[in-house]
Figure: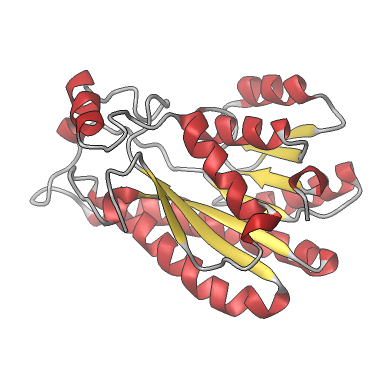
Amino acid sequence: MQIKDQIVLITGAGRGLGADVARSFAREGAKVVLNYRNSEESAQRLAAESGPEQAIALRADVTNTQEVQDMVAAAAEYFSAPITTVINNALPDFSFNGDGRSKAHAIEYGEFTAQFSGVVGGALNTIQAALPGMALAGWGSIINIGTNLFQNPVVPYHDYTAAKAALLALTRTFAADLGPSNIRVNMVSGGLLRTTDASAATPEEVFELIAGGTPLRKVTTPAEFADAALFFASPWSRAVTGQNLVVDGGLVMN
């Protein structure tokens, strides 16, 4: 199905990367469901950019199963059609500042469980809430947002990286499970982006170091990363599932 004919749910779309993903899909004509937890003002403003016929901002904590189910039902009622594309972008509170993160000798398991709950639990809730609508539509596309730290763990984001690695495993097992139902599951993984709310604490010298290590000699922007997500939602990827596309200027090459 063409992107302009899709209803796309983006979690964590009120700010940062999620907002850029929402803008990319809206630009291509998709009807967009902007999920937010705390960023109501910015999410509503972003929805207003596209207009009420194309976008709606809905609050839900993705870790709350009932709130997610209510959000998906409200979106389907608003657009008179089910959600066909889910982009799991929502992230528990996290600051990308290696100097301020817990190192191996001090990190506690509670930090891991917080990330697992938001990253894996949140994705599970949104996927399961959207599956009945995808079955009704006869197809679906699920796009999970990952990280290149699986392959290049240059900073000690132990809890964040472990949760995203688990999300990659879920991407592949769900792709195998849901493929017979014509539902594809893929991942888009980035590195440090210049600049999101989460990466605002990153020292400038880190950005410069990363840029120097890429073939393109630049740090990927949120808008560039967001555009790559369009591929997995488009008909051009109709035979692609269970894959992880790294979008980081070539810093990590699979």
